[in-house]
Image 1 (spheres, rainbow, N blue to C red):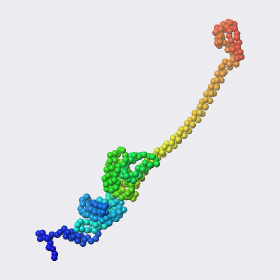
Image 2 (image 1 turned 135 degrees about the horizontal axis):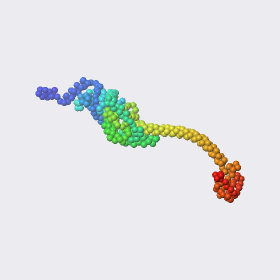
Image 3 (image 1 turned 90 degrees about the vertical axis):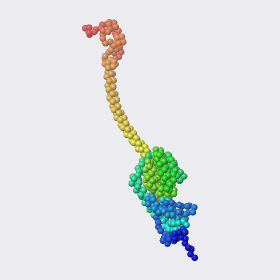
Length: 404
């Protein structure tokens, strides 16, 4: 016997269950197979304990949500889907990304309408990530800041380094050990600014650390951002416009060592230098010291050679001058020796002995040479010196020519 339906104002009243069952029947009839659906993950809602994931999907126009729907990925499918997603895109499934999923449309009388996701195509998300990456690069170039950090001048000896990393990470340890154990015993001063280095939170924290370092800009020569291990997972944050723009316009040279070899991020592109590993970054700084050291060594050898050549040249010149001076001196000495010899000969000819030898004599009176006869008188004793011997005589008479 059929139960009479309750009415209100001559219109039938339906229970919520009846409406839900009707909707279930309509959905099942009109959406009998899986459909490819594109949407943005607004919230991931992953529960590690059960392994189930309940994403909230939306379609946006700008920042405005046009449509929103709940989805379900059972644990039996989520691990496989997420692993494949990470392998291709380098990122796990997360909020804020666009996906293309294969899903059935189901209506449960208790939980309502939902999309039961069976598969997610990572190639679609990868393409969307590449497109967004290209848009960020284009924006940075249009704003004229894409190469700004590359045009910074690194000091000759970059000793004072601000390090953005995780203190407990192997990458940070490798960086510090490589600097400390460099074979040339160069000294570095490193200051750590701890930060998360992957995922969406890294964008905010790394940017904050850069702002903190900028406030101490006079105390540093450069900044490094280093992380080790983890492959390429979590690197999409380094393609973010805000972070890349902050690095590009930073007043000090920024050297990145984010630990990847196959995918160059935008942060790598805009930084002063990008290296694959923290060890490579450390070696970059050691090489800067080494270049200066080599220049000094080359200059030292060049100066030594130049000095040696100059000394040899000056020595040769001095030797030449010495030889010329010696020859001149010899000639001067010889000429003066001849003049002295001539003078000696003349002096010898004028000596008393020479005069006496030629037959002349010298008369002395009172031990003085007698030159005038009026100096003596009769009976005075005079001595006449000859070449051989002398004669003593008495004056008998004097005769002066002036008195004649």
